[in-house]
Each structure stands twice: as structure tokens, then as C-alpha cells.
Image (tube, rainbow, N blue to C red; front, side):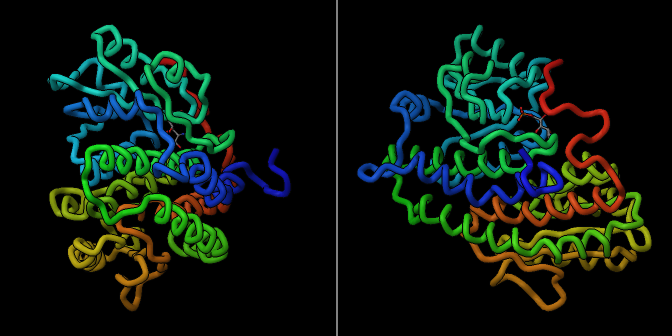
Length: 357
Ligand code: M6R
């Protein structure tokens, strides 16, 4: 039930700090660090390459998963859109492990790939919010998201839960491989949960940004580099699916190769700046769009912020930034849709789970 909330989406955005704490509680083990199935551990250790397969928001979480697994566990990862995979299958490695990410566990495009790779004799792990779901039953292993039912069509808490679980999996694999890390995922996720709470208490500011930048516009661009680019894709998907504003996420450096032609006077460009190594390059991209008349809005992270930034999120570990930088984007999309009188929880032409290919 929605309780006092006007929409499930807003309730689910607010639930994110609790979901992260729940994930900590479920996966934390007092003695050995993390509670993870030995079979999953073995599958990760034996894999020479991980193939992440998913759709929509879960696909976007997959990109962050790639970064986490490659950085911490040092296993190469490919991320694929499920609907493309079957028809355009990449050359597989000798010992692939497939990871299916799916909130519902019922997405037909992802299931079609699962059936195919199982027939080929490969192993599969499903990361899902619904343990008894088709993708969970048909895969060899399951990791549960513990996000609680997600009702709004626009996925919010499942996305952050997916990234949190992927971070734990990446860390655990690194530990099993004997890789020394100065990264304690439980501690970092606790910091994330607190930061999420701070952001969820700043809704007025998000409503203002939505009004200022998106009230009249037909389109909106999201830009970022590195992890911020992946979150830009998710910010754009949230905005388009519920407010019907045409929105696209771009890698900051790619703008000048074509997309910058679309920048007109007052075109909103929302830029993320949460990664130290790309903080200056993304800011030069903002200057480039500003010079063409864009209405830019920089969302940066504390410590990397500069005067003139529109919003500053609390500081968290560099690898954890997507879990919190997405919250302003979820809220901006929510308020933009609300201001336009859209049906936030049930946007047109969409279903919560897509059970046809
Ligand atoms: O249940 P799944 O995670 O497999 O769903 C995948 C997509 O259909 C889903 O994420 C969709 O993109 C959302 N409506 C995005 O908010």
C-alpha cells in the first residue's frame, strides 16, 4: 500500500536507504565477511568472463556491475541488452558465467537468452527481487535483492539494490581470489544509506530543479563520464518513461561527435560530476554546451564541487556514487512528470514486467 504517499514511485524512492540497510543485514556475516552461497563463489572463481544480460534499468545497473567486478574482482565483464543478445551473440569465452539482472525475474527477452545459454551448457546466476520467479527458477543460482515489492512502473529501489548486491558479489569474489582491497563494502553501503536519507530529505530542491529546467522543454540531455555516464542513461530513461520529455544520456566526450548539434537556446543539460578523474573534462563539456545556449545544471559530489553547481550530493566512495547520484535524477523525473499531469505510477504504453519478446 501507498500509505500517506501520493504515488508508489515516491514511496519506493524513499525506501532506498532501508533497502540498502536490509541488504547489509541479509548479506553481512559476523565471521567471514559476507554470506554468499559457496556454489556462487565457485562459479565466479571459475569464470574467465562474465556476461551480464538485462533490459532497461536493470541493463543500466549492469554497466555499474561491470565496473565493480572488473575493478574489484579483476574478471572481464561484457554487458548486453537481452533482446539483442540472441540474434547478435558475441563470441563467447571458454568458461563464461551469465548474470541475469531482473527486478521481476519475468522479463521475456532475458528469459529467451537464459534458455539459450542453458541449452549451450553454460552456467547462469539471476539477481532478482522475486526469488520464485521464472528467471530465478531456471538459472543455476539466485541472489536476492530484498527490495520489497516494486509497484511503480519506473524502477527505482530495484536499481540501487541491484548495484548494492553487485558490489557485494564483486567484493566477495575479490576476497576469494585473495586480492587485497582497501574497500569494505558493508561500511561503504552504510555510508550510502545515510547519504540516501539526506537526499530523500531534499525533495523541495528537486522539485525546484524540475520546475526550473523542465517545465516547458520538449527535450533534455543527461551527460556524464565513466560511472556518471551510466547514471546519465538511467536518468534519461526515468525522465522519458514517466514525463514523456524526450531525454537522452550521453558520454560527455561523445557530444561533439554529433549530439551537440541538437543544443539550442535553453536546452536543458543535466551533467553529473561525481568522479574525480573526469571532473574537469565533464566541466569542459558543460562549457561547450553553455556556449551554444544550453540551460545546464551540474550535479556534483561534495569535495569535487565548484561554485555555480546546482546541487551537491554527499561524498561516498567513488565506486558507490551511482547509488546516490541517481536519487536526484529519480526525483527530478518524478516532479517533472507530476508537473505535467502525467500518470506517474502507470505511464502510457508501458507494463511493469514485459513478458513478451
Ligand atoms: O523486471 P526487469 O528488471 O527485468 O525489467 C527490465 C525493464 O523492463 C525495466 O527495468 C524497465 O526498463 C523499467 N520500466 C525502467 O524504469
